Image (cartoon, rainbow, N blue to C red; front, side, top):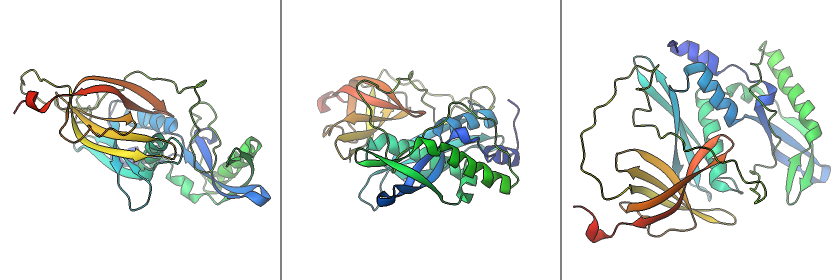
Length: 305
């Protein structure tokens, strides 16, 4: 696609979304009155579609890293990189704490939404006044009643009208109303849809693909490796009901991915070499990530000097 200048990209990214592309979460609940305050977020699906439409699918990518905070929860940080002609890829970062349920996936999803705001995507939502809604209890959590969707959409459109703005066309299915900051629990009867193996962007972010006009890097030939991945970083992350080990893996050809292994894996330490690795993918909203299902550690005496 034809290259656009930075101002044109900024304006197109910041265009208000259709109400259908917003999700609403319960920020505060007054249980005795069954009332609460709802706040809007742009869905990850809508963010990805916006980036595809504005800069092209081959001229942006995202990256996730664990992020340590001073609080009790672990967190994820997301960087969204966009290619600009003559400048290359520019990355803007932001992060979010892991959620209470399915903590890592919730952190990945929320950190991408916050990183998108750094690019102006959905920033207009900060102009919203608090919206009071009726809520209902499901289990131990409180949720926005589905009948409040009309009220929420009307409040959002009224805000745009006051600013003399019009929303973009809807990107797909009506988004959901969520509870008090939690992600829905996966059910064995309704597991998340598995996606194909996501492309792992090279260090230049895939800029050599058609449309970004960045010369391909010439790589030196290396001897056949005796391992598949080296562990760059490893960290055990604790949720309310489970533990997961987050690892950043560097493949023999220099590419890096983030993966999660279920449970606490004390052998996954920085510098460990892995072979016979089995990776699968899972999807939360539109975020696709790797699961490290099995592996073998290369013994120290077999590792090349």
